[in-house]
Image 1 (cartoon, rainbow, N blue to C red):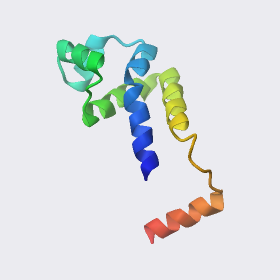
Image 2: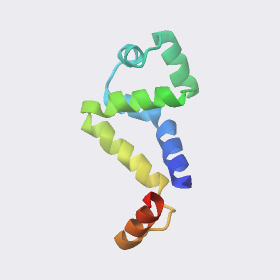
Image 3: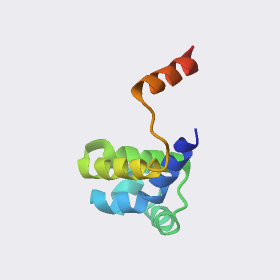
Image 4: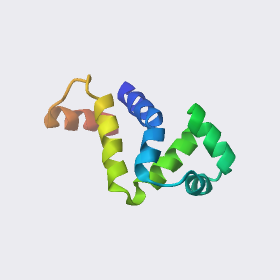
Length: 100
C-alpha cells in the first residue's frame, strides 16, 4: 500500500518536469484543468497542486505525448526501486486474496 503513496509523490514532485517535457504552454494547461493562468503559474512555482489538479494535468500530458508518458513511467519505477520484487505467482495469489 505504501508504494501507492510513493508513486503518487514521485508523480507530484515531477509535475513541473513533466510539464516542461510536454511542450504545452501554461495557459493551455491552465484552461484544460479549469484554473486561471495566474493561479496555474503560482501553483507551478510553489508546487501546491491539489490531488485533482495533479490527476487532470497527468491526464492531459499523457493523452497524446509518449515522451511524457515514458517519463512518468520512469518516475513511478524509480519510486518503486527499493521495493522487493515478487513473482507472478505470488502476485496472482495476492490479488486472489484481495478479491475473494
